Image (cartoon, rainbow, N blue to C red; front, side, top):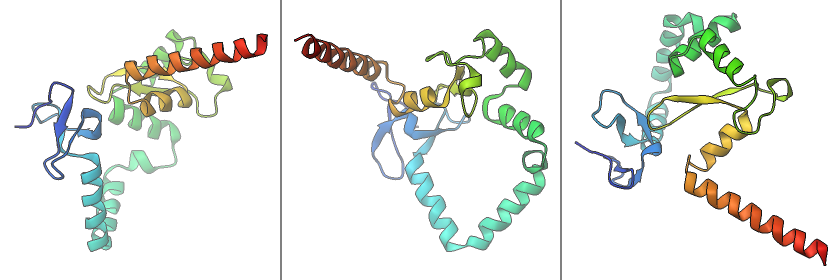
Length: 173
């Protein structure tokens, strides 16, 4: 049974590499809550299956569409409700309540939803899958690119402060 190491890593059973937990999909049936192969290996395997038999993939997709019409009909509200429930376990009312608690603003940059192209997106912890709050798309992507690492974010802040001070000193001369 693979378990997470001290530094939050896990070995992929396919490529045998030790990777961060965020590089594995969620599998609630497993003791560590993560899939046994990394996302990259799973993606590679899916591509190989598709290339080997594209018609089988298309049939599977058609059956999924037929089984889940609420996701693919022309009712955006029902589609959104289905997506919120399936992906985050939230109802529209719960999402709206979160938005209201944040004054309809991003929890990080505080931009109001009216200024955003995509509105507020749901931020969640990729290890626990728990919802943290609502963010603008840029802030959500930034956290993802920094792999939700507080240490990396603190270094980024120090980097910006250093160069801001350096620029001020050069300007004052």
